[in-house]
Length: 53
Image 1 (cartoon, helix red, strand yellow):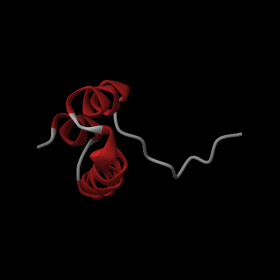
Image 2 (image 1 turned 30 degrees about the horizontal axis):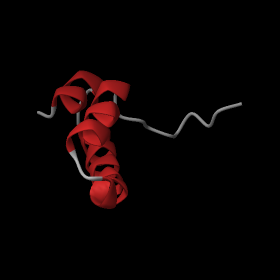
Image 3 (image 1 turned 90 degrees about the vertical axis):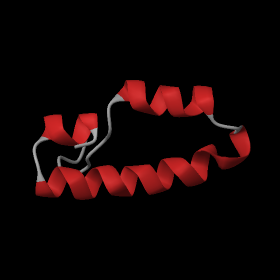
Image 4 (image 1 turned 60 degrees about the vertical axis):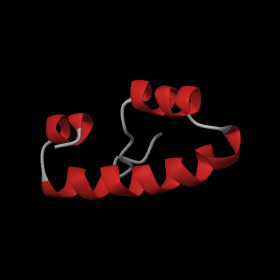
């Protein structure tokens, strides 16, 4: 069973990161962006976090 406290960004955002960024930096960027997304989810709605408001 999946833990409920894990927050994941939309799959389209993750896929576009792999498409537009070099392989050498994807993992670093992904980690930073996941942290930012989680902070936004804690302070606002899922919709706002998904679109980056």
